[in-house]
Length: 188
Image (cartoon, rainbow, N blue to C red; front, side, top):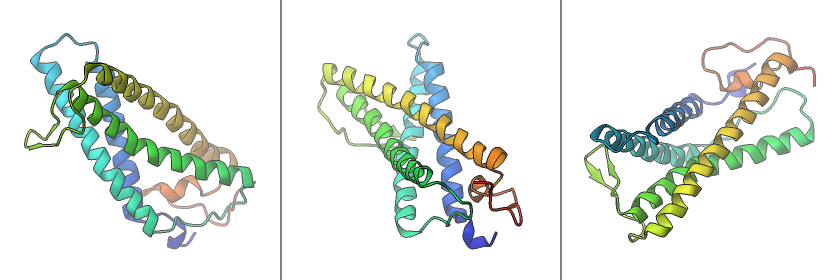
């Protein structure tokens, strides 16, 4: 595999950094949601928002990078439906990593709770205070997060299928630390 057949270092770094931040934000949300109201819970909510704002900003960078840098070509023979599914999955994943933080920000705004990034920069409220709308946005935010979890599981399963079953280099294109298999274009 030539170096041009891998994703760029920037794309790989953004992919795994965004994944790690989303995983941390999701785990923190699941943990904190049932805690009794306390200074600790408020601190965790602030951290969750910081993670969300960071994911939102990095998602915009990632999308900009993707629009200006073509992904590497597949060296494996992949069925047309798989290529279509791959393209659709990436579009939906990109949309979710933008929309989920945005729904969180909208929810905070409608709830009348400001978003203060890193306890330094207050972000503008996107909506006026409206508790009914806040409850709706909260439900949308939670639902989209669980939808993203399902999509990530499917995405990961597909990557692992390429790695362990098809034994091609599709998964390895996004790994910074594993060398490509030589002379193997996959079984597909």
